[in-house]
Length: 551
Image (cartoon, rainbow, N blue to C red):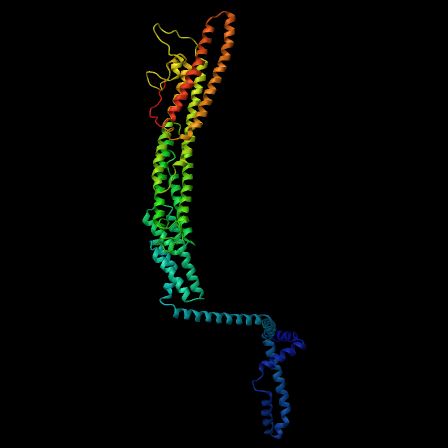
């Protein structure tokens, strides 16, 4: 069976395959010695053979050849799988070698130029780094002190600013500036100087914010001194404007913080007090800090201040302060005007006016006069209160005309009736300006005069000082009397119609009502109007110190 399987294996080989197997076997079994060495050795051996041995040598070679061929075939049959695997491995190796040759060609064609360029760039960067290192080394040799401490100057400045060491922070910026001057064209030093400048700029902004808070003169002096030394502003004028602008923010915030839930009267007085105190402080601080405005020859415009940094003349300094004072006064005037809109009593308005007069007198000592500016506001509101009182008098008069029963009064025996002439002089036992007694016979006219006197009493404390109110008051009073006259005329028309109706029915009382109404009209024209005119003249008299009483 073994022989049959062996024969079957032999029949599986074609002549071509057998040749391949034979070649592989020869290659695998060949000795390491070269063919030339074997030929020389064999030739030497043959020359040493005898004739008989030489005669048998061809046969022996044939037998040996057959044996070797058989042995090769057996080896090929036994190891044919290894030979086939080796052949496959050869093909794989050959393909991979071809792929490697193609990759190497691609690398040589594409990648190598890029690699060369990258290497050249790297060499250039290396040279620049080497030069920078040499420059830095020279810088280290030229800069005094520890370089790490110098590079921490911005952080040190911030720490100084947080701790309030502002002079030290400014000294560090000055040191950075000098270092840049001594070591020019060095980017690190330039960046360091810029960082130091920005750090000080942030610190100075915080200092300027402090000017918007309630601070005293010594702290203002320190802050302005630091800002002036740093040259944060381009010139002295800009510094002064900035100082006034930030102090204006403080004053405005303080005025805005006045409690809005206070009554209008209390809020107006509180607002005036806050304005007076803070404006006085700001003006005092400005003149103390920027003192060259007071020590300057105004005619020549030459500054006589000890402050060498100031190049502002006295006129410019005075103009800056004057402009700020005017703006502040306008803001105060507007706020006061809004508050007084809700003040409806003349006495409260007079009290606020006196408070404002005291405020103006106090500020006038530092050259900030606000009293003339506020008179316009008080005149407007005094006129409003006066007109409201006159309107109330007119309404009461019209209501009384519509409800009054018109009758004539008979005087008791022995009594006397004040004459129209004596009533017109407004003289009575009660006083020179007491209401005429004859008006008691005419209740609507008496009520009207009471309303007029109430209006006079509302503004009597203001009129001696608010002279500009006289003409507007006179126009309002005249308008009120004209309206009263129109009301009387309308009532007269109605009374005539009633009289005609009553006459047709035979009632005699209508004629008495007509007479009573006529007497009231005469009293209105000849007694009430002159009396009101005399009281009005007395109201604006400089010597007026007494109040008018109501009947």
